[in-house]
Image (tube, rainbow, N blue to C red):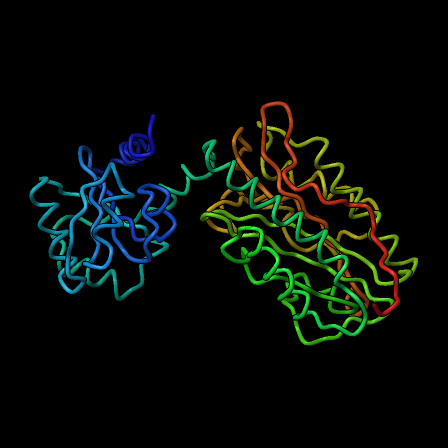
Length: 359
């Protein structure tokens, strides 16, 4: 069953005759169209992609299963309304998480059909990756792995976190990435205690622990990997939390599989860390889906009842953070299989200690 047929089945379950899609990544997923603007309308029997004159040829080339219609953006909603009337549609869904108040007011003004808020219709399909999607994520992950190997020879005392981020970005682009997958987290020394410590001007110092959380953006898909390294010998305290985080990650990788809930998957790292006495220093979820977006359903957390399914691609990312001292996070990307997982990121997870000498 193709993407459109699967979406129509979801809409039928929700009692909807059609859906207006405005989310950029949902549009790309369904149509294959990579342009930056366009609106999709899917009905029981037809599928339309509305674009302005800039994208008509591109849309016709990429969105093979869609009727491409050129419109002036100023009259888009009148055109959609007329199409709904021509198709005799009385109820139309819209992506409530992607619609501003202003845009909803335009819908309400121009569209005569009943507007029904919808959440997660396309995102539900995106949770299970197609073979071609998995291949692109694997390539993105391999670029991340290559970049990590490269950056180990680059890092030294005296350079800044931003220097490291820029070098990673440049290297990944040379290896085929469009860009980095997100704003990299390069956090050294006491800043490594910041789970989202985006690269700063702080200089790398002897004795620093450095968290490198980065990924590659390749052909629309993303990888997301974290490694924590040391510049010179770390303290016993940092060694201890590194070993605990590493053990928690390995425990999860050994036991994750299709059929368990996000809550159960989260517990594989969380209970391990709690038993070591650092539960309060592990305050975020243990992983999330990745793909077209860097954060996608499913989320592994203490409250997630969603079930891991074969074909999902997720991160696994336990961490411990000691305020004003430092932190450790180690993260892999994994493909869920019926009886286990395939680990997509292959960089070493044992603690790497770099020489303190200035090269």
